[in-house]
Image (cartoon, rainbow, N blue to C red; front, top):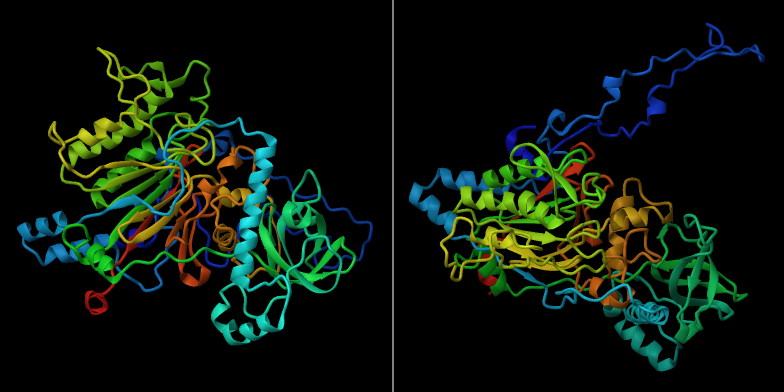
Length: 592
């Protein structure tokens, strides 16, 4: 691809392998398979013939050695692009506009672009540290019950499920059914009934999906439906999904199931509602006009450019952070409006970080020395950002830092509070606990910053942001991989599995709906409301070790993006570039 095509979608620091359209991944054993025939004419008439496969030469030690970051092939190649309207990139728009303007007009166009980053007003994500790991069992059970009751009410309202039918309700339903039918239902659903109560007619039960087996992955024969303690005394019954044309289920998922439970022990399901997504976030036409075409707080008619990347930011064989340096060099060249960086920034899985003495880094003389995790972040991450602003004093790029449960500099709990930069005043020595972010704010600026915009925004994990008029949901936990590792499905359309898993987050109104959680997820059930989605985001960023993708879900109302990891082992990975174009000015002026 040419240089202009790099920014159409997901850009890559590294592309290790390429496959042609329609080719699936091939395992090493499949690649080395050779067809053997007992005789030359292709017949196999001799029943006792034995064929010895030919010997394969083992690869040399040099071929087994993994590639280093500097040896990676095809750096900067675009792996995946989502651009259904074939729009130009933000860089292309800027270059085209600059070619028609004088130097002073070009500078004015760049300076009159504003980007506002704030937390969603309805979000309940944590804003500061809290006490965790001391939640009693009774409180955790109560939180699970409360969430099930809340989703029970939402599903009954969204799907028009009633506890009992009366003539008055039927009359009202006949008049207003069309207006009440939402995206999750296309026809009338059966009457609600508690889980575990025998019924000879079709009923609708609402409950949580559980795995009958205490160990192992859930499957179609181990499905259980658990009712609430308030309505069903916590009853669990078997769920038989054989009559459902297509489904995708995982433990912790709260669903509405229509079927027959004649024995009180097994629900023969005929229809399944996999949740109810929250409502879309809306903006006034005047707000859109100000954000998209305003010259003070808005983009002055230019596209909003957002880069998303996820850690680890250095290869596992060193702490030099070369992939991050290359990514920042690209950012200094393209000058996006916002860069969303998800942790881990100092990865606890990094062998050089797991040393009992501390992280092992190289000093200026090239000698090994130990450093605290905060010092590694201040030198390798904050230091790189500081150099960016010192070398480009006019750059307006803002950074959003999202922590990770694998971060050595953050509390390992989900939901996760924002990172805190402790500005401890010491004499002659580095401030203990400081992340160095205050130095990033001062880089290239005068001593008194005044009312200048903030450069680095530390947010929680997960978080729901508003960048101008665009609502973005972000979580650094690999929830896609966790759900895919404990999910059962049937008859899904080809190629829809990853989008279907991402859609579960929206249907469950949660950034982490899986329960029991995966190993290392570190859920604090007492704060379950702080990882809920306040609304349906326009863009949902879910970094994962699974295949990178950018797909629309929920009928195109939300774009889900998996930017991948910036490094993979000893070589490079991927990151995402998103350009949000404004609406036409004439249409907005008429709407205002």
